[in-house]
Length: 167
Image (cartoon, rainbow, N blue to C red; front, top):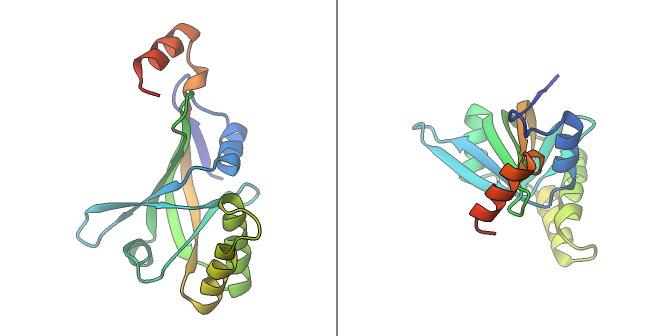
């Protein structure tokens, strides 16, 4: 089972973290490591399957993030909000390419339905690229999650922090 933690006093429950990952329209910030050990980050659209506790995204197979993941399989990720109250979920895990075209297309549709309005030509275009191998779909298996929700801070601390930051 994946370990769900929260920052002391402001962490989300496992249910809240699952709901946040399911509902958030933010991009997932994916962290990979180059062969020389330097880190790289990549924003990607994603879909979270709460029942399987897996995250999915697609990318071009020749891009650096795909190359890095095929070599090491290890990733870090972060999904957070930029509106008050700030909240998010991050973690680390492993990634693998989904090789079954039907499964890849199914996850591709779910990713697109989260970010693209129904009927837009982009949907057909991306699904065609998944079919033809122009895009590959990755599955992330998280090893653990950690979360934060500044809305859970003490009212006085929360008010002071909200007034201190630029919105």
